[in-house]
Amino acid sequence: MDDGGKVGVAVLGTGRMGAAMARNLAAAEHDVRVWNRTRERAEPLRDAGVTVAATPAEAAEGAACVLTMLTDAEAIEGALDGEDGALAALGPEGLVLQMGTVGVEDVGRLGELVEGAGALFVDAPVLGTKQPAEEGKLIVLASGPAGAREGTAPAFEAVGRRTIWLGDAGSGTRLKLVAQNWVMTVIEGLAETIALARALDVDPAKFLDAIDGGPLGPAYAQIKGKMMIDGEFPPSFTLKGARKDVRLVLDAARSADLELALAPAILERFERAIELGHGDEDMAACIAATQAPATI
Image 1 (tube, rainbow, N blue to C red):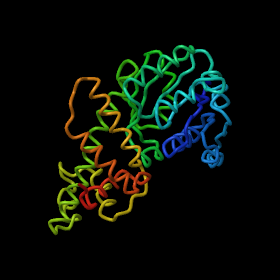
Image 2: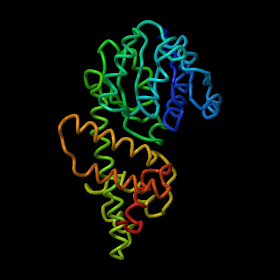
Image 3: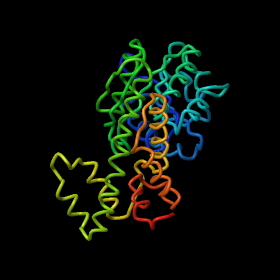
Image 4: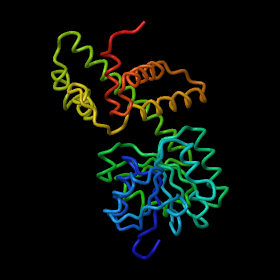
């Protein structure tokens, strides 16, 4: 970190979330280098003053921290490890900020990989999707060594409106999976409620109006409910991504000897909607499974 608090940050993964985070880091005047497996998708970031690297190692060269926002633990491991991996170029005591959604067991494996290379591992998934990411208003669920906190502040402050520190690495992922279980339950419950309204010849917009502004009417229901009513699903968080997270929730529950009743049913509905061709649309498209003809 220099006297002005500016740092070199490597962002690995420039999908909807990673690209927005890279833009906000650049807007905060940090030195940002990005890498994406499909380089063409990272190129538009040049307009924001971001350098596009050919490999994760090139992105991490000279950086104080590496931020990963990749699909899953396998992708993260691939971007960190090996001759062209970010850990090969990250300096001693460098920081790796794992900010995607992974499984409970994945965190331990990634932490061992990072610490084995002499770097500090911070598990810091986020709450929020495309719009909060673009606005720099994510909630960061940070966990890791106390000595890493000061070094993470410049990056976390650029991408989020709030950072919650939770303890040892892995605590962030556990809370994220708890939150995702709630989100998936809400989204599927909303889909079935709107489908029920239509089946009973009730205008679903009247339902949203009835709960608006009260304790039963979170803003999330209004946003996703309107998408379901309109039948238009521009992706903020895709249904395929939601399916992955439900699977991670179920894995975490099994590892804790907890049997969940709703999550398996939600997974089945998400699978059905994906089979119907909605996997790359917003997860609100899960309503397609409820509205589709019943299958035997």
